[in-house]
Image (tube, rainbow, N blue to C red; front, side):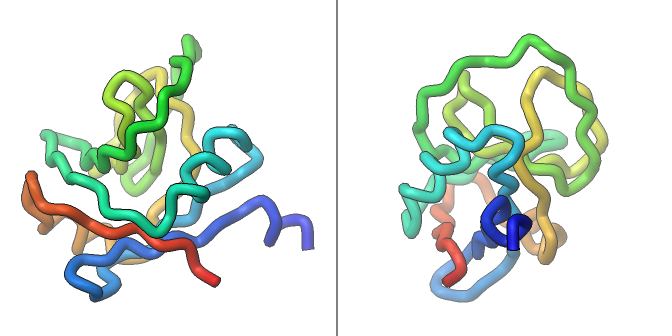
Length: 123
């Protein structure tokens, strides 16, 4: 039962259709994950970078000084951009992992910069 409390499944929708599922882990940074979950459901602007997908959500948060290694599909939060970051390649930076894409990463990679995606918490 404890694992269910510590993880949230979040659906990523484009025009009402589910294109991906994320799993956010509360145990890594519980206050940040709670702030994100409280915003949902909401629409967020998408920015596509070379090896990342940013979902601009606008939560102020302190930056980490520790280096983290990210795998393809990891989800973190960038306090400078105030955005969720989804990694499309392996990378190392100072953003803490708070989750993972569990379904539909290839669909997210097809999304264009400047559109709005809706994030919804599963019931």
